[in-house]
Length: 248
Image (cartoon, rainbow, N blue to C red; front, side, top):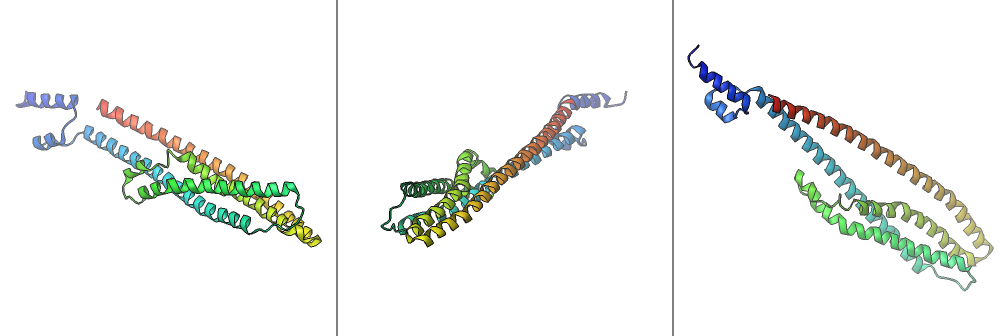
């Protein structure tokens, strides 16, 4: 038996039973073992996965902020136009159809209410998201309310861009009828012309909105499928690294 052989055997047995401490390894002059290499790879993989998760959260935050900004600008603009149109349109001494006046009043009221709701949601949530997005810290994304308020953000964006614009197109047609109907035959021709022009525009708008919604849903589905596949790969890698750490 070589001198010190028992000590080397005891040292090797301890290395097999518990992880080798780098500081102790430096003190004893022992080179890093495979256990340290596996553990280092495991920590690097965990850090990369955490970084990917933060990147995904930041992308959602920026998307929510962009939607709120777009809905606030659109809602402020269209609701202002609707209010000005209702105030500036002067009703002539003419026997208007009762249904036309009711439709004009209801459409204007609903249009302003929808856009003001979208504007209120944007005004309440956007400052909190802006405050977090200006902090240059990866962990600060968890302080943003965009995940908890996701439904309200989507609702405001849908009200402002889809429902609000469709109501505004209807408002334009009703204003033409109210404004030009008392003029006479020329007024009737003007109202019919505006209606004929606006109906195809409305149809195109609805078709585009539906197509865009389906494309967006399909894109989100594909993205979620890719994220699930990436998560499954990451889980498989983490399980493999954890098993290697335990078995080494």
